[in-house]
Structure formats: C-alpha cells, structure tokens
Length: 141
Length: 131
Image: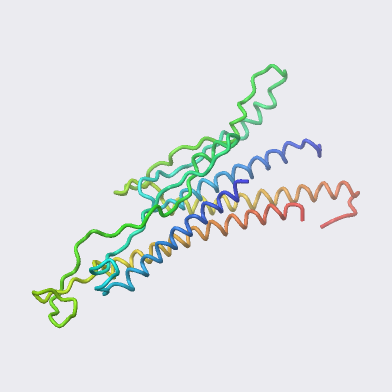
C-alpha cells in the first residue's frame, strides 16, 4: 500500500524538521552562553539532512527510488565567536574581551520560519493521504 | 452492461493506483525539500487508453503482451525549475500543486466508483433500493 508509504515518508520529514526546530531553540536559548561543559562559549548547532532510500521489495521497483529523510548528525558551526569588550565580565580574557557564541538571532529566526513551513508542507501531505484513504473507504458506503 | 469484468471499473482501479503512486513520489520530494543534493523525482505512466487498446487487440494467446511492469510507471528526475547552490532540485510549489491536483482526481474517481456500485445495487434490487 503506497499511501502508507507516503505517510511514512512524510512522518520522517516531520521528525527531521522537529529536530531542526529543537536545534534552533537550543541556539536561541544559548545565544549568550559563555560557559559550556566542554569549555568555552556555546557553538551554534546545525542538523545535516540525508535522504534515506526506503526498503524496496522486488515486486515494487518504484519504492526503490522513493526516499525518506533523516538527520544524519548534528554539526557545530565552525565560524568564529563574537568578541565584545566587557572587562567586568567573569569570562573576559586579559585584554577584557568576552567571546560570545557564534549565534545570529536573525539567522535563527529565518531557520525557524523555514522549518515551520517545511513541517506544514509535510502535514498537508499527511492530510491529503488521509483524505484519499477516507475516499477509498467511502466507495461502498 | 457487464457487471463482472467491467472495463470501466478496471480502468478506475488503475487510475487510483497511479494516483497513489504519484502521491508517494510527491511525499519523497517534499520530505527531501531541504536535503542537499537530492534530485526531485516524477513518475510517468503510459497512456491508459493505449494500454486498453493493446489489451483489446490481443486476439491470440501467443500475441505479444505489454510488459507487466508498465503499471509501475517510470520514475525519472523532474525538470529543474530553479538552480540552488546545494544541488537540490525540489520545487515545493510544484509539489503542492501536484498534490492538490491528484487529490482532486482521486476524489472524483472514488466518487465515480461509488456511483457505479450504487447503479449495480439499483439494478440488482429491481430499482427498489435507492440512495
């Protein structure tokens, strides 16, 4: 049944977009965090999306070309930290500069909107698949 | 009117099957709308009418038959509508439009099937049973 497969693919995308949303939340929450367990300020985190082919049966070669999505791993943004002159800060270096996380709230907001829109698009697909399933059930009603 | 082995029913069933397959391809494209390097897919089906005629013209068991995989449809890369630096070729608007279209066609076809079965019922009950 292909409709179930379509729903499974959409579900994988919902999960991936939610992970992305969580990372945006983490980045925004830690936009000013100067101390982490690993030492140093917080680094911006990004998800890496990877297409994942569905397991195909020999009877249905179409399934071989369909691909779900998953978050392969979470990477840290290697861009430099923001340095700000704040001599009174406990994490300031000898010159009085504090390294703040490389999180740009504006970029995070854009990411947030994109993730929400992608999530919506996939919810629309789930709705469409559900509607089609209901239409099928109504043939004999 | 033939009730069993009715060709219209068969054609409608095939159409539903195709629409469902298209929906699965759209799902794959939408899910990977932001996967770097993913290339959008589309599925192409042979003309139903031509397939039908090919069926009809087969008058001998040893005549050539269209290959069975013809129903599966051919999956190919969709035309690229815009270039993106990450190599992804999914056009979300196109996918949403396609989804809406196939949903409407699915609805129309199931409705036609429903009416057809209602007609059978009407005939089978001497016109006494109506909905």
